[in-house]
Image 1 (tube, rainbow, N blue to C red):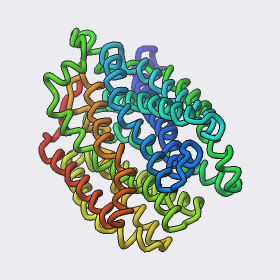
Image 2 (spheres, rainbow, N blue to C red):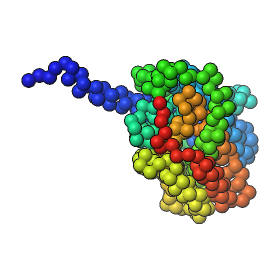
Image 3 (cartoon, one colour):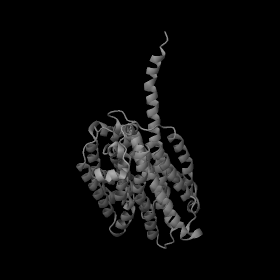
Image 4 (cartoon, rainbow, N blue to C red):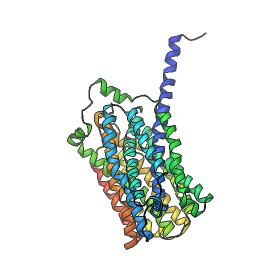
Length: 437
């Protein structure tokens, strides 16, 4: 006996909802994966080749420091991007703003791959590099908050941590893609070929990836929470003004909570890569291979931590991860400083595993700190202010500390940064059961 049209419609409703959620999850993941691919391509290039190509210093240390300054420029730009895109994300909607942020990032990254070096156009080369690096920061500043909201505002009850995990997987995949491509180039090209043109290839590949991301994002719908806010006429005229006036405390606590994530990641990747190749004399391909191995553990830690944050709460998971991160700073000198490949790989694995543990709950935690009418702005600003505090100057400071005091000083820097995050998390409320509608 055939079922009636009404019963078939009822039966198909869960399937349609599941399809919609799957599409939303993929859209939140693919966007952050592409954006972080773009961002990490520059980070890897800064550690390996940006200094010699764009800065004419005779000293290798001076070149590295100059490259790390350009690396930090994007972190200054990211809060500006979160203010700019957050305004439109809270006023116009999540979907269109995410499309715009992806375009800004993709165009900036692709153009970096086309900028001639200092030998070709002189001082104009580093100027153009800095402008485009600033554009990367603007784009990424608008990306993460929207992607996190896309996932969490569509999540079913009790699973926001799990849904918020998918944009958090983007950095792991983006890093593996960028470093994997650099690793492949290191295996197939000579040093002269790599420094001449090979390093540009990962930047140019960004254009193809951005086209894929735009295709996916143009097919998603607006989030239910934002639609409800429009119906209730809750939008504010200037979201950043409302954020500063009424929500500055959770913004500050969210930024402090993010410091540990950024510090663990960029000390482990950018600084350690530069130090491992220039001081420990690892080959470029062997150190990139160790990083790709370690990032797998970061990816494995992400769903584990997200699941635990739904079950036990955001704060307990973060406190445990941050305390472990404080202790991990003491392992830097004996492990990384050993110059032994197994011990260096162990150090990188520990740090990036802990990065995954502390980073995963943020996809739900930061959106949960804010009401719908300032959520895009608030989550993005907290996330990117944490980047200024924890990442913008981290490789630069680590380079100086290593030169003057050794790796023990760099390890102490990691521990202090993690302690600041612990203070932020201890001061904030538990948000697992917060309402997002």
